[in-house]
Length: 116
Length: 112
Figure 1 (cartoon, rainbow over the protein chains, first blue to last red):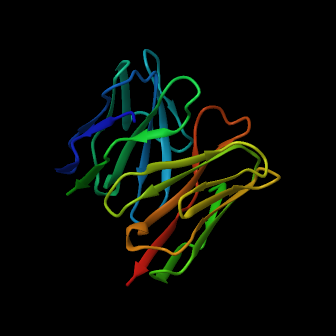
Figure 2: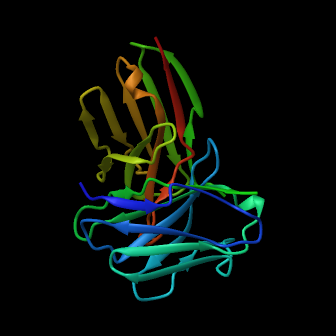
Figure 3: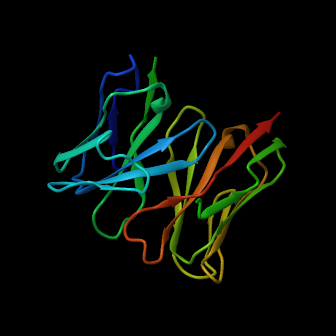
């Protein structure tokens, strides 16, 4: 199956700093990747759709200036949490889908962000 | 608000008992997918259903897609400890583009 790698798996940062999370498709090209946020024991909430070579599409209520998304190549999308605050602490997870008939999502391992 | 609901939220069973989670959407879905997320892990794709009334089986797991394409279910026969995790349905809402809307999830715990 397709492999999506997310890095780092865990990060602790100080309040006010920025954190970059990388999502890579290792064995396929992904023109579209998706970024989710998951609170403990809750569902995955779509934050934004990352489009290669163009601007990301953000879901309602997600601050685009706070969660910067860059999708500069067909295998890499990055999410930068800017000026992080404790309420940004969460599990962030990316996914990508193969082009063509297969529509299932392949997820990265997720990033546990803790802002202190 | 959340458009895809799952019940129950939690289920605690004895090993060998059956388990069912139900997924209900407020709008018609073009397809439904099911994922399993182990504690501390990431969601892993299980199956996709596309046709109205479709039923698919994977060993002890049976998946159904409702006739109206607004609900789905996952049934596990004779649960095992390896079935522990949270099961999410996820659907493409008709007219909603390429994105998946995840259900609220059902957390399954299996006791020996």
